[in-house]
Length: 388
Image 1 (cartoon, rainbow, N blue to C red):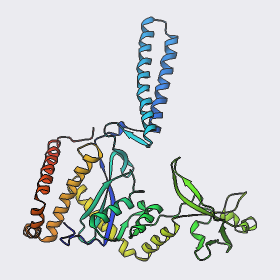
Image 2 (image 1 turned 45 degrees about the vertical axis):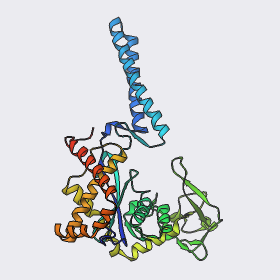
Image 3 (image 1 turned 60 degrees about the horizontal axis):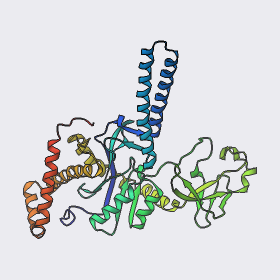
């Protein structure tokens, strides 16, 4: 409806995320390291009590220590069950109160258990177009949110602005396939050693598919595709390796590589071309990219700072997204009121769509009924002050 009312442009979209606390305390969230720490502590206590029992003289003391060993073994079984559940889930962490909630970094290293809310904001009037919740970070969120926004707005394509947290080759590639032009802040090249030439000193030559190194030598590939893996899961991406035999006698070798046996090699991702095009667009249009912060931070600042929306009152992804959607709808309504000139302008806008509401009156009434039920549930839970 916002699109039909010409309140959403559908040309420039900013995607960003914010974190909300869930109904799950940090102590009820577990990862492999935390479970192991508990098991090691319990094993140490069992050994301590067992040794004390062997040295005890009185039967009463032995019985008391035996009971303590039994209690620790029961606690150990609890963490063994959690460990098996974590392994079976294939996830890096599990939460016992709200299974869908994850440990996330809220700000400045503060960790809490909750949800990462993704949303897209249209540039015309800073209205929210699409929302979802995904992983604990933004690495794999760009394409799903951008494509869902495209389907919601029913447009052929648009420009999308996002920060460097969304800068992932396969996500940029998926957007390009959907006619979505990305302006995602480039990541700095990773380097394990500051004493050697950074990768940007090696210049790629697309015409001859080779690199020119700082010594003006040519690095070529044998055409074999290799695969980077991620923690035993499926390959993150494929790459080709570029090398040159000239490294062996090069006078700049000490500045180029610390390896003794082999020379310097450059790995070029299958998404390198898409990444380079994105980076060039951002660097060539700095003022346009700066719109990202103006667009994405506006709704977050309004909802978190002015409205205090920093936690949810329900559990489970589906219910959480229902609560988030209610808040986002309220934000969009306040923005529309400001854009159309207050309540009179809003009434005029509704009058334009009276035929739409009459045509779908039964669906609309059912939606309002469900919305009222959810609202009543949320109001009844306002006594909840902090996560369980």
